[in-house]
Length: 349
Image 1 (cartoon, rainbow, N blue to C red):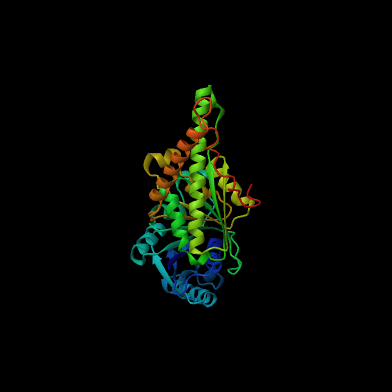
Image 2 (image 1 turned 135 degrees about the horizontal axis):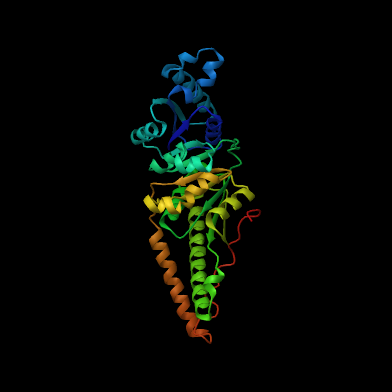
C-alpha cells in the first residue's frame, strides 16, 4: 500500500502523524511524508526561529528535519517503509503533480477550520486535494488523538443506493489496516413529508415508493455487511437505517457514537450542480468532528448485479403477496415492511 501524508508544520501535521500511528498498515506499505515550501508557511518556521536561523529555512534544512520525522515514524510502524519528500510551489498543485508519479492508494492530509466565507470564496487545501485526487483521501482533524492500533477504531460507513457507495464498501473489504475496527454501516432515508401525503392516492403512492426504497437500501446493507464479513477485515460489523437529512444525520450519529472515522463514497458532482447543491461528502468532510475518508477513483464490480437481484426478488415477493393477500384497494397488505433487524449501534442516535 502506498500512502502520501501531506504535512504543513501546524497542529494538523501532528494529527496526520497520529492518524498514521493509529492503524496497523499492511507489511510492505510505503508512506511518503510530503511538505511543500515556501518556508514561511512550512514545517520549519518554528524550529528554525527557535535557533535564530530563520534565513536558513531552505530546502536542505527542511529535508533533514522531515527525514528525521520519517525515521521516527518508521521505528513506530512495523514492516513499513517511510521516506520524505520536500516540494516547492503551490501546495495543491505540487502534491497533485507528485501523486501523478507516485500513484498512491491513499492520501492523508490535515484540515484547517475556515469560516463560511473562506470556504465559499477560497476553499481549502484539503478540499482542493479532495477534488483533484483520483484515489481515496483521508481528511484528519487537527485535534485528532492517536488511537491504539490493537483496539481499533469506530468507523462509520455512510451507505446509499449508488455505485459510489458500493465502490467504497468494496474498497473497504481490502483494507487490512481496519482489521481491529468496529464498522457500522449506516443508511439515511429522506423522511416522508406531509406535503407529499395530500390525498389518498398521493399518500398511497408516496408511501409505497418510500417503503420500496427503504426495503431496497436495507437489502443492500445486508449484502454489504455479508461482503465485509467475508473479508474478515473488521472486529465487528453492524448496520442500521434511519430517517433524516443525510448530511446532518450522519454528522449527528458520528458525534454521538462517537466515531473516529467516517468513510463514504464521493458522487463526483461537478460544475453548476456542485456550486448550487453542494455534496454530502464535501459537507461532511468539512463539518465532521472526526476524520473523514472519501473513497474516490474506484468502480463497483457488484452494485448493478446485487441491485438487480434485489429488485427482482422484490417484484416476485410483490406478485406472491398480490396473489395471496390482495387488499381492498389492490395494494399488497404487508410485503413492503422491510427488515426490522437494521438497528444502528448503541449511542448513534
